Length: 433
Image (cartoon, rainbow, N blue to C red; front, side, top):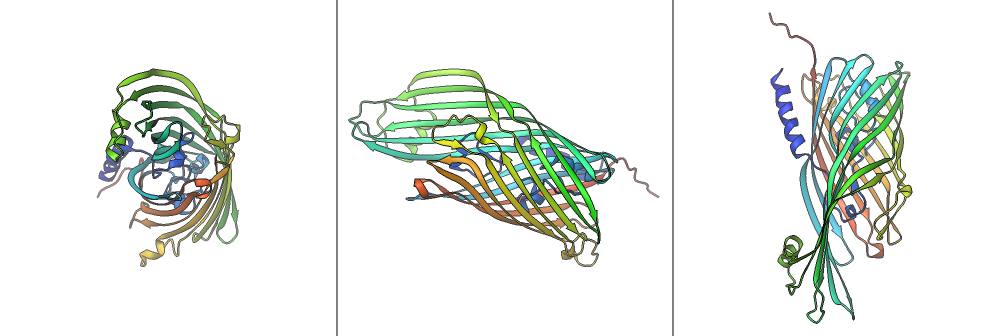
């Protein structure tokens, strides 16, 4: 085993230990499973998130399992991702800036034989990360402050297999084990001394786990002038996932000291009398079925353009949060990749892959009668490693989510993602003279 492979195996172990969700903290992640992660790996992210019709011999594509039949025989590909993000959260009266850096994913893929390709890895499925406070005031209760905090999210371990049925038709199936925990804490503080009421806190910890299957298909048309068109589609079953929930509630009669330290104390430990303590409440929560279709067109190994449309049927899911209603999610993505000269020997910049894209998503959330939408642009580069099929990939995404209408929150975010994609040869004995 080469030193390069040993290094990647070590990095993959570290990644498996520390992998977490890439999305920067968002108040809108308090609903449902949190913010979903559906934009693929670095090549896809830089092109607006396309991937349903994307096929590559040396890049992993987790958005369509049928794509893995495009791998070269006897090769293995490793990919590790790192994400850094900044999110500016604005209201009509204030704003907050948050930053975060996390490992994104680990994955590997290989071609077993002429008709079978496979991949497995660990990747985020959703993220929950929010902390905010708001106040209300009336004659009965005086000023009441509400402190809300959530963390966690879902991850998935997946195993994908692609089968080349004919030289142009590939079918894929992806089996995932989805798991994770979501913690949501709400603290209520009665500010005025004349109110005879205890401050309260409710801490809900929900563990979620189950198996999921999704399917993919791709058909490649070989056209004239060294060009090709790939059509693809994906489908994921509706999944009723198992949950175990623990609930802890309590009260505190302490007089509030209105500063940040007080809220931190009452959030973590300042509860004197436990009034609720319920553990391991079993239940289920439903992930809706989804469908997507897309295409890519490649011309002369120079230009690749593509687009995807993706839908999740959230309107069929029962909503347990009275502050929001669910609609069907609809996402449009488009992008391109340009390589000046893939085979250039003398000019490195001609072998660099330049990527651009954009997306627009009508999310499933509707808060106060207003749809929470998300749109943005992205760009990036694939930097080949000399004398190998490996590459470094970077993508940058800038977007906006939400609105200031109806006293809601608007987020302006930026995410920089780095990826190391290493390709090596299997089962080939090196000969030395």
